Length: 257
Image (cartoon, rainbow, N blue to C red):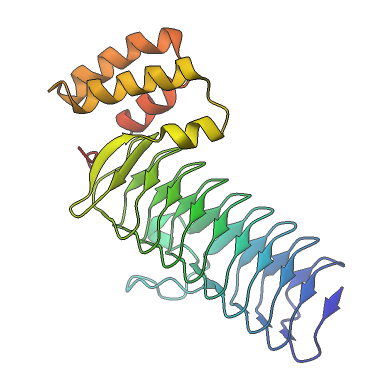
């Protein structure tokens, strides 16, 4: 373990033997930090936070802070972070609220660029990328492999589907279905994230089927329930279609059209 002499560690914190903690960093009570994690200088990990293995947290980040919610009155709530995440400088992640389930959770292998904000009760999957100054409001769900461009903002209680891409400076006020690219002001769905899917190993027949799904949802004048029924026929030849169907059927706030 390498802990700078100026760091302040609460006696109730549990830190693995090979964690590195830089100068002027503060670790509060009920914080657990897994092996191989490196925490740079001037980081605040407030309380009630579980951090997995091999994470890198850059300077001036604020992790496990009290939720910015007027309904919060000091209840015991938590933040959980998986393995192999990178939190660049100035990132801030808040704990959950009692009314929201008491937990904010981040998966593994995510990249959060400078000044990303993840609010209370959010659920972020794995292998996501949040570019500079992305902000997601409370209770937002972001599924695996999603990418959010710089300065994108997401309203509370919304869902960003797997492999979706949100363009920079885009305000999201409805759910974003899996695989879709959303951008512009006002935000609109533009196409399937075909380049991203190619990079992740999706084969050409699968991408072709997902392009057909895009046309069914957005270009043929179908109602959502009618479109979903057509997608369920397509899934017989396309396993990936189920992910899209699930993201449509689980939407409670309505999808971007």
